[in-house]
Image 1 (tube, rainbow, N blue to C red):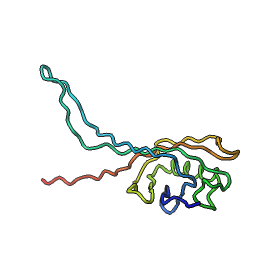
Image 2: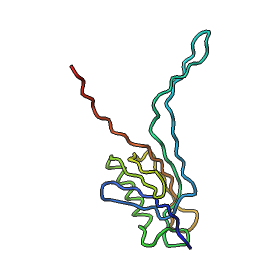
Image 3: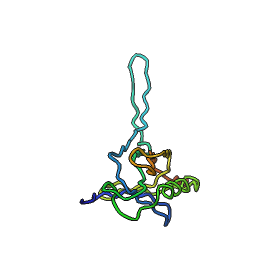
Image 4: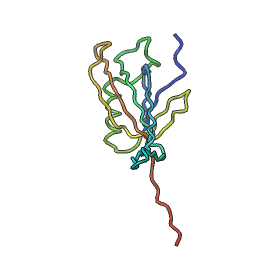
Length: 144
């Protein structure tokens, strides 16, 4: 079976995790942060602002053993994959999210990560993950 051109990766520094099973879909949300104000005897006025940080979410599972659905051999055990993500969360540092074959390559915070016993096979771990684009703020110099 031909494998996908897509690879889903999370990394923090030199520590990397490739997801062994691709999700059925990935949701990318671009909220615009616009503001609407009601003006008496005029109606609503919308102020267009800069976009908010993107939110990316998807669901998949960490398999216990190789199957035709897995993208590669030698993937980490479900326990190790979960421990890696939980360690990154505890580090309180952004992760890099990359999907090969697309333009998705972002620094992100892990906003939510849930996992539970898998539906497909004993030992598999289903998970849901939500990532939020991470932007650093740098102070501007003010001319005097």
